[in-house]
Image (cartoon, rainbow over all chains, first blue to last red; front, top):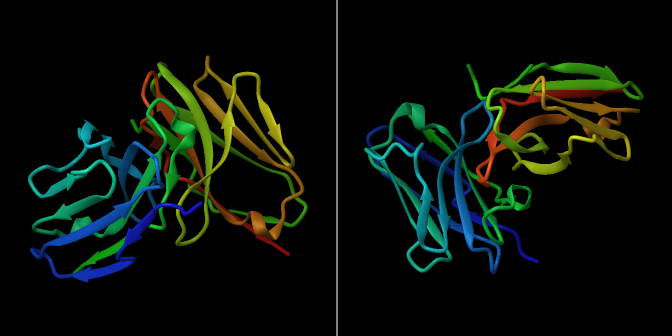
Length: 115
Length: 110
């Protein structure tokens, strides 16, 4: 079974530029999560989707971050404009359905460096 | 106060040693508890769930103390391949949101 796919794997941009990350969850997984992991810290949930609806975006900095999952499958996370403190690994995870936290599977992440 | 607190380490131990990691959480309504393992520059992967009765998986033993809001992970007979960061993870009641600690780094040397 294919795992969670993410692209790009690495991205270097200058501050104030825009960037977008893409995630393709495991086939059949209804729930999709975006996490931010800053160096030396654990992942922090940014947004959770159930199919194409948002379940939790309480920790998403909405002035600069946006995410969508229009058809309930792939998802994109965008940062516009980027700040230095956005340098982090952005992890996408998916699970078959909500309510079972132990079944989240993580993708390899996108490593972002903002200069 | 952080929701999940861990000693970041690093813990440097020789092969064959026994090592224990501890973690505390602040939300008494937390429902589910896990240990994840994260290798350098890789994604986190579930190591084991933690149950109130305690549970064991080979050389790994996890325990939960709800009264003290404390979780532990014991690794016996450490292997070089155990070198990684161990993340303590808590899920609040009635959600599947995962709240991660900062992780404890383990380095096993020959």
